[in-house]
Length: 389
Ligand code: NZQ
Ligand code: ZN
Image (cartoon, rainbow, N blue to C red; front, side, top):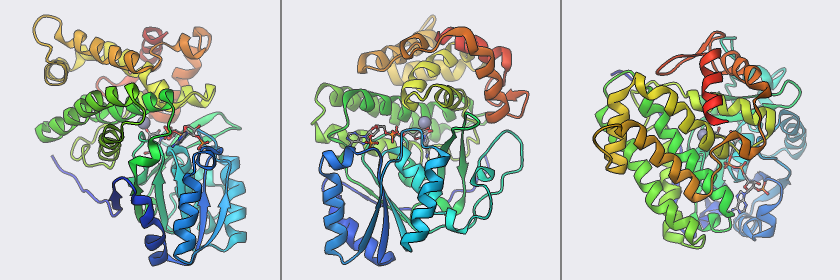
């Protein structure tokens, strides 16, 4: 096992922590470009809280609103113009993964020459990564992606119908203010999609690692167990702050790269889902709740020991057929909390499976296959989509 680990994001975690926003922003600069989504933070009062914290600390604020779920390149280009006009010295992301991802890319754009799509990962083409960005503060309002404490961003090119990621050192947020109170207003469906996202972040590395990583395994299992236990409580009572907090901390830990150390694992389920949400604009976590169990039903025979271990340690399932019963238990959990588990539930039919599979190997793979255990060719991805139909 050989790896390098780096994560410079300073995290403030806890209910009411948004009150720290002003003081932390003031340490960075004087004028904030505050990015929000389609309006949830206006309705639920979170924007007012953020504005107050920033104004009380003496900051000027320029608001940019309208980042859509599955954020689009065109929106980012509009934000770039507004950011340059504003002359801000930092970017603050107040929203879910879409707002945070968009903000992390927007912060690089004043320094990035040429077409920003060149920074995105598309198959094996050479990426022109950003090297400089304005400092970013993330304030997540939804527990799911882990974007608040990682260097990644996922963007959709609405013209080419491609959705893919970029990760660069300059994109690590300086500060993440993780306040579970801000997630109390997330509706049940989006809450459930978040649970599927958190779980899939750790199962991807768990099931696709070729090396022996006993500690990472237990950390991943721990994340899944916490999300199942407290996720159930949250969907039963959306106002359960303690449960919201446990889930949100799991979301941070699941994808700040700590659980993935040494696994060097690809994320095949994510590659397939990103293609589906590029074509159909579905919520990322909903897509994962559908694709993840289908991928597992396809993949378990190639990694039986791990699937047995997962079934036993997460669900207490042992004996004959434990691998498949473990997958079923996970799928049942997704259903129980209110996620779709079939493509038909989100209006995706079989007619374009071949196209989705080709896009997946072209964008998320090396042109002929997507890495993972097992490596997936176009025909394998079509099989997985059939299992998810
Ligand atoms: O746009 P607004 O009005 O704010 O509403 C949002 C949106 O409709 C709403 N919402 C967020 N916080 C809320 C709330 N509604 C009520 N109360 C609140 N407190 O929820 C909806 C979904 O928001 P979105 O940001 O799209 O969700 P999520 O956090 O799941 O982010 C998904 C995006 O992140 C990418 C996904 O591909 C997708 O584009 N990912 C980013 C990753 C990363 N940077 O590391 C990794 C992930 O695997 C993922 O790919
Ligand atoms: Zn994800």
